[in-house]
Image (cartoon, rainbow, N blue to C red; front, side):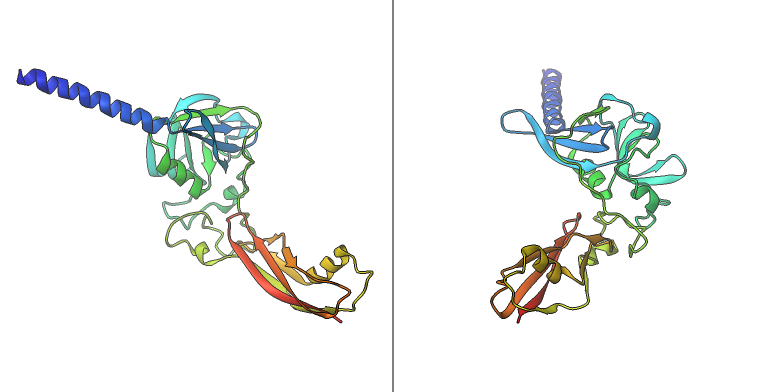
Amino acid sequence: MKRITVLILTVIMILFCSSFAGADTSKYTITVNKGTNCVTVYKLNGEGEYEPFKAMICSVGANNGTPSGKFYTKEKYRWRALFGDVYGQYATRIQGDILFHSVYYKTTSPDTLKTEEYNKLGTAASMGCVRLTAADAKWIYDNCPVGTEVNIIDSGTDPIARPKAMYLGPNATYPNWDPTDPDENNPWKNEGIKFHYTSLYKSVKASDEMTSEKLSRIIRYGVTAYDTANNPIDLMLAYNIEPTTPGKYEVKYFATDILGNYGEITGYLTIE
């Protein structure tokens, strides 16, 4: 009788664990679009349907090196040795030698990022794996358990526009760190939007011929915004100026970069 009771309890536990695992793995599905180098995560909603939830820029295999089809993730690795004696962070095995992982590093240290490869995100550049930013690779590693469905397609339209990756150019302060890496020692966390300017105090004669386009050019002149990695980016303005009414008007210059970092400065325009 005791053996039968133990057997019944074991079966119940197996069924419970299987059900629990199934619920976990079905919360998200992932689609990799090889045509656009975009990963889309779909989340199960309250109606039992999957809806687009998150998009990630990626690099799939060059020369069609990434296989198409439906797969289910197999294993996870905090760091994983890759072909060529290099390493990837937050790796999740899709099938065989094909994994999700960060852009590769020379060693298992996050300050040895291969910068040239990072700047290829958005193009087919790997040997077959799906390369991601460190933050995106970690998101899959943390949120999508083993058994998550992955659909790799040849082409198509992405339901969420593919994000951009921060370009690590010659003016990047820390080119061998992924700017998205959540590592507490990542020096990029102390960087942000920067403004270069000749003067924030400007003046112009009152005129009823001053168009909004000309006014904007005067305000913008000599002011440039730079993203976290010191690349020039779009500069936005906020002001309420009446060009025919003399006075000193406040102008706000502001910008947001693709990492979500925001910055602003204040200037003044005097209408004489």
